[in-house]
Image (cartoon, rainbow, N blue to C red; front, side, top):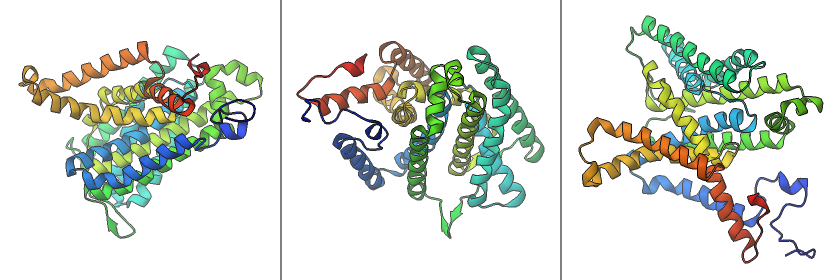
Amino acid sequence: MTWRGLPSTLRTGFGSDIQFLDSWFVRFWAAAALLAALLLPLALTNFWTGVANQVFIAVIGALALNLLMGTTGQISLGHAGFVAAGAFTVAALITHAEAPIAVTLPAAAVVGAVLGVLVGLPALRLKGLYLAVSTLAAHFVILVGVGQYQSAISYGAGFTIPPPSLFGFGIGSERAWYFFLLPFALGVLLLNLNWLRSAYGRAWMAIRHRDIAAESLGINVALYKLLAFSASTSLTCVAGALWAYHTAFVSVEAFEFDMLIQYLAMVIIGGLGSVLGACLGAVFVVVLPHVISIVADKLPFLQGLGGKTFDLQVGAFGIIMLLFLILEPRGLAGIWARVRFYFQLWPFRYRAWES
C-alpha cells in the first residue's frame, strides 16, 4: 500500500503505464515463461518440438493480424494470402537465385510492405463489410497469382525448400529451429510492444476508437492506415517465409480459407487488441487440433472418425470462438487479467477494470 491508500500495483502516471514490466507479478511470470521456454526442448519429443515451432510462427502471424484488426480496427480477411506471398517469395528466390535466408527474409518483408500499400490504398475509403470484402478479394488475387507461378515453374508440383543455414550453422532439426524461432518471435513481440508505446501506436488506437475524431486532432488517418497495413502485411509475409522454411515445401493448396479461419481464431480467442492475447491465442489454436486428435483416439465413442477429425477440429474452433464472443469478449487475455488482478490486489478488492 502507498501512503495515499492505493495499492502500489495500480498505474498512477504515464511512465508506469508504458513500462514493459510494470509490476512484480508481471516480472515474475515473464522471467518464469522465458526460463520455461529455454528449458522446454529438453522435455519435449521431436514431434512436440515441431508443434512449438509452429506456435512461434503462428505468434508472428497473429501479432501481425492483431496489429491491423485489434490495434487499428481495420478488418482484414486476406491474411492467408499474405502468408502465401511470403512463402512464395522464398520459393522464387531459392529457385531462381539460390538466395540464403539472410536475403529471403528481408525480401519477404519488403514484398509484404509493398502489398500492404497496394491493398491499403483502396481500403482508405472503405469501412466495415466493404473493407473486409476488399481484403478478401486481395487474398484470392494473390492465390491466383502464385498458383499461376507454381503451374508455370513447377508444373503444379510445388517447391521443395532446402534447410537454411545461418552463420555457417545449418537449421535442419526441430531443436535447431526452436532456438532460431524463439528469439525471432520474441523480437517481433518486443517490436509490437514498442510500436504500441510510440506515437504510431497511439495514432493507430485513436483511429480504432474513432477515425473522424482522430483526424480532427491532427492525425493523418490515411497515412497511419497505410502504415498499419504495410507493417502488418510485412510481418505476415515474414511469417510465411519462416513457414516455408520450416515446412520445407510450398504449394498454393496450403493457403486456403481454413488458414484464415485459424488466424482469426487466434486473435478472437486470445483477445482482440491484446498483444498477450495474440500470443495466447496462437498457442491455443495450434495446440488444440493435436489435443483433439489425442482425445479422439482415447475416447471410445470418438474412435474411428478417420478423415472426419479435421471436421471435428473446425467445428470446435467455431464453437469456441462463439463462446468467447458471448461469454468472454476479451478472450484469454481477459481471463489472464482477472487472475493477475486477483493476485496483485489480494486481499483487497478492486473492480473498476471489469467495467
